[in-house]
Amino acid sequence: MNTVDIIRKKRDGETLTSEAIRYWIAGVSDGSIPEYQSSALLMAIRIQGMNDEETAVLTDAMAHSGKMFTPEDMGGFSVDKHSTGGVGDTTTLVLIPLLAAAGLTVGKLSGRALGHTGGTIDKLESIPGFRTDLTLDEFLGLVRDTRLALADHTDDMVPADRILYELRDVTSTVDSLPLIVASIMSKKIAGGAQGIVIDVKTGAGAFLPALEDSRRLARSLVAIGEKLGRKMSAVITDMSQPLGRMVGNALEVREAIDTLRGEGPEDLALLCCELGAELVVFAGAAPTRDEAVAMLRGLLANGQALEKFRSLIAQQHGNPAVIDDLSLLPQAAKTVDVCTAHAGTIERLDALAIGRAANLLGAGRFTKEEAIDPAVGIEVLHKVGDRVEADETLVRLYVNDEKHLDSVRQMVVQAYAIDSSGAVHEPPELIVERIEGSA
Ligand code: URA
Ligand code: CA
Image (cartoon, rainbow, N blue to C red; front, side):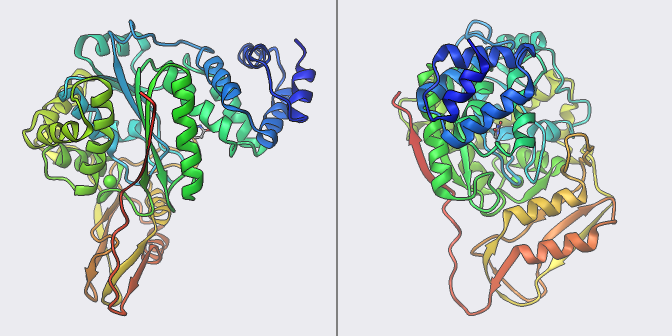
C-alpha cells in the first residue's frame, strides 16, 4: 500500500478500497503517515466525496483506532443520543435520566461547549462535586451496575478523529459530508450503543443552517450507522431560536430539573419525549412511538425521571441536594433585564446571536482552552409568536463580569425582530422531519 497512490486515486475521483482506507487510518493513528499526506487526502475527499461504502469503512476504521465498547461491555442493549449542537439545548440532561426511568441502559459520553453551542459536560460540572472525568472502567462499571452513566470523552477513544479534526480545522476540510459523518458516527459506534438517535438541528443556530444540508446529513448518519449494524433514527429539529428558556450552564441544569419535575418549557419536554420514543421502541420497551411518548410523558409527570437524575448526580459524586435547592448551583452576581422598545409580535429570534451573546457573558468558549463561567447566561422570556408590550422584559441576563455587557445587550436586542404591524407570526414547528432507519 502506498499513500501517494491513495491520494492520487481519490484526487482523480476513484473509489478507495476498504484496505486503502484502513491503511490510511492506521497510519494516521500510529503517526507513520505524515500530516501533509493526510491533509492532501482530506482535501481530495472534500472535493471528490465518498460513497456510503467508503464512508462506512472510514467510520469503522476510525472507531477502531482506540478503545471500543462492545455490547457485553455495556451489559447488553444500550442506547445513545447525539445532537449536532444547539443553543440552550438541555436535552441530554433530561433525556438520559428519563430513558433510565423507562428501564433502558444509557451510557453516554458527551462533549464540551465549542463555538456558539453548549456542551453537556460543562453543564454537568456546574453541579457541585459532579465528576465527569470517569475512567473508562469507572464508566463501564456504572453502566453495568446502575445502567446509567454520563461522562466526558477520554483520549483513548477514537484518537484518529482528534488527529483528523485538527487537520481539517486548519485545511478548510471540516465541511465535508463524509468526513462529518465519519467523525460523528465513529464516536457513537465506539461508545457501544446499539440503538442511536441523532438530533440534527436546522436553522440559524445550527451547525448546518440550511434544511437541505440537515437532511443530507441526517440521511447519511442513519445509512452509515445501519451499515455498521446499529438501529438508527434521526430527527431534524428547529434551531432557528434557542430551545427552552435558559442558555447557560447552571441555568440549563435548573431548566433540566424543572423539566424532569414536569414543570419545564414545553418545547424541551416535547423534544425529549420525541427523541426518547425512538430509543424506547428500539429497546422494545414500548410497541409504538405513540405509546413510548405517553410512557415518557408519564415518567416526567410522576417524578421517576427526576429521581433517576438524583441517582445520577449522587453516583458521580455531585451534591444531589441541588434537585430540591437550586440555590446550591453557582449563582451570578447580578441580573440585568433587556426590554422591548415597542409593542408587537415576535417574528424572529436568532439562536446564533443569543448563543454568541451568552458566550460573551462567559457561558461558552471561543477556543478549546478557555474556562467557562458556570453561573452566567441568558433567560429568554419571549420567543417567536409571542405578543409583547412596549418596555416588557425580553431576556434576563445573568452577569458576573460586566466587561462586555453593552455589546451583549446590543446583540440580544438585534437577535429579535418584533413586528408591530398586527400580523400574526406562528412559532416554528420544532419537529421538522424524521429520517427513519429500516429497523
Ligand atoms: N461534529 C463532529 O463531531 N465532527 C464533525 O466533523 C463535525 C461535527
Ligand atoms: Ca434551554
